Length: 204
Image 1: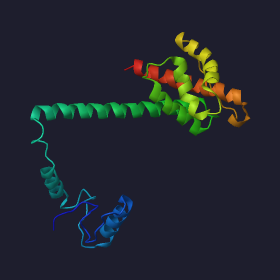
Image 2: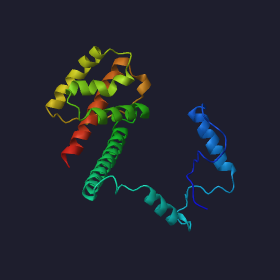
Image 3: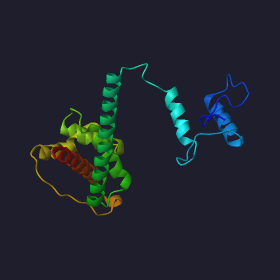
Image 4: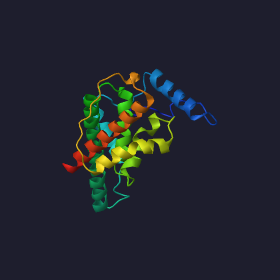
């Protein structure tokens, strides 16, 4: 019997017209898991019929009639290059987050993750260092106006322009800090994250 996809919309005889997508998916899934004679997607690579299944699917999905061979090759190279860049970005992000965790152990992990993720997003933007620092922490400090955060970020942005090395660490109790101290440390963490990304990219 020919193999069928995991979700088979033709598996039952019910007319699902007018039924919302979620209900249709649930119905199809129920049919799939309850029909013992239904041959589903080969999750086990060592299964004897797996290779035949993928050969058949490859024949059904062929780009030869859509793209010239040279164009297909160029697009494949571009795709894998992009995937490589994505993987590199993920690896850099994980290294940076670990560095922040080591240096700012007293800061909640969620706080560090949010700042690190924001730093990755704004690093390549053309905005000023001051704006980047504010962007890294603003979602965590919504009770603060952007103007106040800009004022507190300005001194840190100046030291970043002057390439002043700093090895700030925080191992205290975050909850014991005043609101202003939490803002200052949040901006310092954002500064460290942006510096780490700058250093990582300069070494490539």
